[in-house]
Image (tube, rainbow, N blue to C red):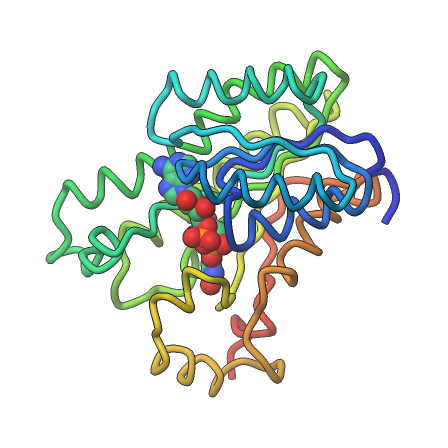
Length: 256
Ligand SMILES: NC(=O)c1ccc[n+]([C@@H]2O[C@H](COP(=O)([O-])OP(=O)(O)OC[C@H]3O[C@@H](n4cnc5c(N)ncnc54)[C@H](O)[C@@H]3O)[C@@H](O)[C@H]2O)c1
């Protein structure tokens, strides 16, 4: 992949899973990364591992649901990196207390709706609000927002999560439309079932088996499968991809 050496990338929510795998791939390709997360301990572990392997990385504690925290995180990241060329928004509200109570449109409490939208959608709006002007200052850049197949699937539960991810797709298209001519690209990646440590912990064997029965590829996804696409979108090789929402799901979204 071309055009990643020396790129300065912020990974918002990259302590574990897809974010951590992407930070690893970025540093392997010569980019520098600032990894932000509510889980500082795990973000530090990830950053330390990348530094030990010869990469440039740091970990910063922040909360996607807090305006000031996001502003401080992006500012500190830009200071560490010396500017901003890329932003990968990947954090999401996945705590069991919220996840298990995100049900149907009748059964889901407004507090659950508010929390999910605050982190998953407004969180990305917050990081973009602060990072985008910095990108414009340096002549442009690439933003990748993490959506989900749930944005389109019409799931029978997880109404707030699905709506938040549909909003993320609209946010990406908006940014591409308004700032594309100034050199800013903004795309969404929509993972299918990707088994990272959070999914292993959730232990949803029945769901995994059901997805395996429909997926076109011979296996479920790994964080590295999504990291490969995000890294491409952040690289100069992805220069003509703008405003798109890409399914990366082993063909799960195909219909019979
Ligand atoms: N794994 C899948 O099957 C799958 C499928 C579709 C979409 N996604 C999306 O991929 C992204 C990454 O998920 P993952 O599977 O790697 O899970 P993960 O739990 O490993 O990663 C999510 C990260 O977000 C962080 N986070 C949570 N709340 C935060 C907050 N308020 N502020 C800052 N950071 C916060 C967590 O600490 C964690 O590091 C999420 O946006 C998720 O919705 C995942």
